[in-house]
Length: 264
Image 1 (cartoon, one colour):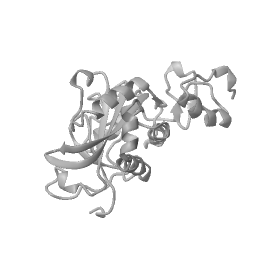
Image 2: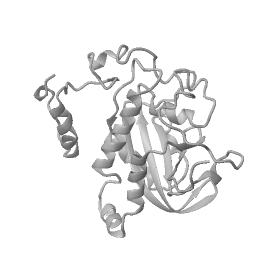
Image 3: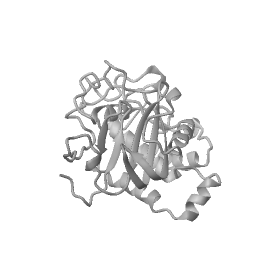
Image 4: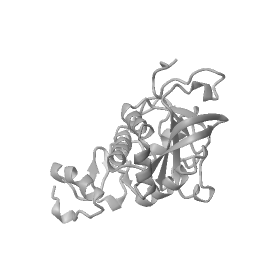
């Protein structure tokens, strides 16, 4: 049984299966920070501040790409994920509803979605597991999710994982909201941090593997022009450490980095 002092993330996949997300200290620190924000911060957000900070946006994006680049067996066609502000806005709208279910329904055929709720305590009592605590899962969870998933999914974590590592899901947008008295499977959480992540194109197509097995970047779509970064199909032409360092700042300023300014 996990330690009672550990911070856990309770997640729901698009197939309505429950799981405990990896005990990532980085993700914990993000959600704990939002849970501890004072009222002044939330009033500022109500005046137009984004539902997720630039720093947290980059951290979540980096965690996804790190996971995608380290899958086992290795992927030959895994695409690099980029942040999509439209997906962020749609995630924000749903996070504000504080509803522990996937939605809105009219968008679920167009996007993939993962949900998480955090309250800083063991949530084993909420698991549909016969009263037993669900053990930790770590990334990548290759023991259960191999390139045959989701066709051979055998456990609750699988479809959550496969959306994260679906090769063609190359855009992501997430939002965070603090929900008071949130109903999570019939149990009221007084103060829950609600994380919504939307993906496009959506993954988890029944009967299809999340990615192709093989040498990284050996089966990338032609649109990537042979670009590869950290085992991921990558386009953009940025090849110097300086460009990688500056890119987040350009993104945060909502400006564009001309490709011709960065050379390999």
